[in-house]
Image 1 (cartoon, one colour):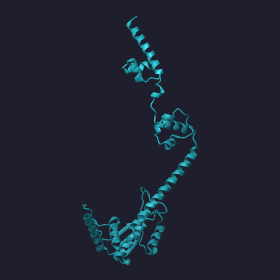
Image 2 (cartoon, one colour; image 1 turned 60 degrees about the horizontal axis):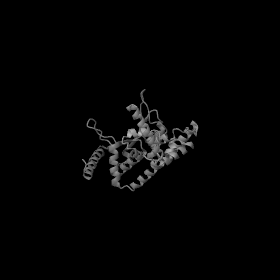
Image 3 (cartoon, helix red, strand yellow; image 1 turned 90 degrees about the vertical axis):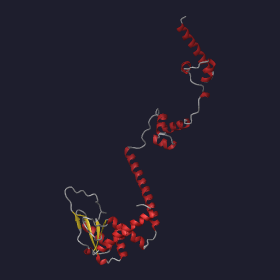
Image 4 (tube, one colour; image 1 turned 30 degrees about the vertical axis):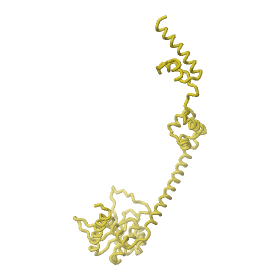
Length: 288
């Protein structure tokens, strides 16, 4: 008998003993110690095809989840619904149920679109209610305004939205332009607080020529409590071939221009008030 045949015979004998021990319920470590086989590769070859005994298997924490996922899949649930139900990843669900038949769609494409639109409508309603609650809470946080607070608000309002003089074009005249009716009301209240004579205040509408000009004039005149005949001539924004209007619709009413005559001194005072606010802000916050 050659040495190669002897080695083959020895391996087969050793394998028979290893298989017999495995079927008796011994673990890999027990078989290794019993046969004195320290090489894992050889031990793997000796036990090839022989399943480990049940007592050596470690319990898998996901076994229950796997079984439940398969059960839900057989009930026709999608991966998304199974994920919501079990709280595990889609990748795990896919591995656990990929051999199961894909469930039939529960809804037609038309029904799916209707459900999607209904869900979006419900979501938007919820979001609108949340925004409404935030706005109401914020409004209550303001409380009553003092005259000084209104004064400071008016200064900031003008410096943000009013006409300002430039070094290259001196325009020391108080002119305020805005499309927000509440901004207009607040600015008029500020002028009244300053004691500006109503006779010095002129109003005109500024609007696109393709909009409802007369409707806008009626709207702004009613807002400030005057007759449309007392409005100054409306300024129309002319169009050309490249003009594209984005502010369209019934709610578009252009802007109202508030022009205070003889207001050079008032304008200079506004500049000084704004400079004073900035200086005071720096002292309070420590920021330059």
